[in-house]
Every structure is written in C-alpha cells, then in structure tokens.
Length: 84
Image 1 (cartoon, rainbow, N blue to C red):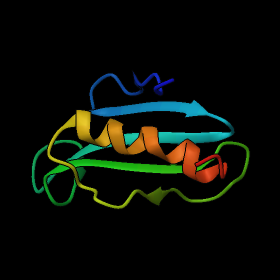
Image 2: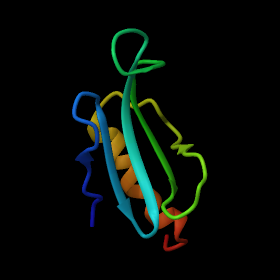
Image 3: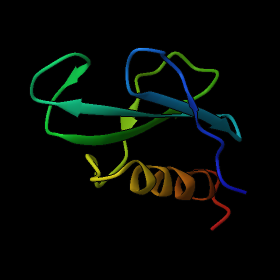
C-alpha cells in the first residue's frame, strides 16, 4: 500500500508520511526564494520514527516531480524492513 503523504507545513512545500517505524519527508528546494535552498527539485528523505537521528536523503534526490519523489519513498519501507 502506498504511503499517504500530507502537507506538513502550510506555507512551505513539505510533505510527510510514516510507515513501519519510519518517517518520510519530501521538500521542494530551489536556489532562491522562500523555503529550502538547494538544487531545484523535490528532495526525499527518511529516518527511524522513534529515534533521535538525522534524516537520510534518498538516492536520486532531487527529483523533477513530486510523484517521482513519492515513488522513491514508497520503495523504501520494503528495503528498510528487509521484505524485498
């Protein structure tokens, strides 16, 4: 079943979802303007839900579209839990 992302911050392009003890976040970055700064695109990351650890960027980030970033996140729970 695909992750159910929701808008996490009203005025920024940030979406989040969680599953199987992991948190997934997608942010939109651009070189200038409001929000996160970096190469333009959607950056996907994950971290264990109940541990105080930094997020790990998902390979391929930044993605051209939100759909591609979601697709990358949807593949991660299977990989992280060893159910692949």
